[in-house]
Length: 333
Image (cartoon, rainbow, N blue to C red; front, side, top):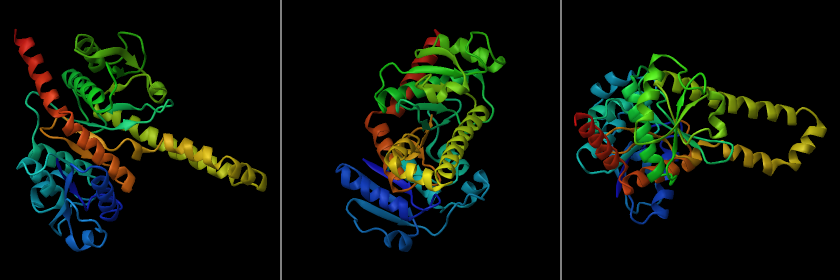
């Protein structure tokens, strides 16, 4: 198995990407990795070259670049060359912590969509109180969506959750303004009807306040609502920890209390650590494409690599393709 990784994407590139790649190589003897980026900068951190090759390029797509234009104009950008490795069959999957929009464009133009999938979805796994986590899709790949898209999100999310996360018959919920049947706007009402008849374990509507309680293993929504939910969760977590830190540092007494429960606080923070869950999958593309968090450290990159390996190993893309094709045949009959 070979993965292509954009070594120049993210806030801590290439150092953390290279370190994470070396960690993955050490733990998986069947893995080969191609790092794409500035060879001199990569080599300054690459101390273990076993099964790691480097493709040099000094062109990079930054967070300030307009995604579609950058992908079309910067033909030798590390992110574009990464997608090309997958398209031309030299890699089984790819990972980048760089510009999300550019990765989406490179995925669509380079890797291509699965036949029958209308819109790919950006799908991170987020933490829950019980530590199980849940898959949220879409969180911004498509701001506008149709009910048919949400149906496909539910199917793709179910296949990924069962095969990669090992959850049998995962539950699927539809993000809505209430849990009762018939709630919501025209989009959610139509999506509810489609999901109810789909080959997934649909449990109905779920509210945003119940997401972190583990209301469902998969929660589907349009990209606009999903992105707001994601950013709200991230912002709330950061604010809460900031407030806790301020409280514990406010006096001598609270500092003593903080020292006594330091390990417990670290455990709590670990439950909300994105690096444990890998990256966000771009489901619906012809090969696995993973968007790692922009601030990914070596641990997060390592988790994203494991995630990509599992998607390849358990034939997630092929299963999505076959399931969508079977549904289309059923609809015609």
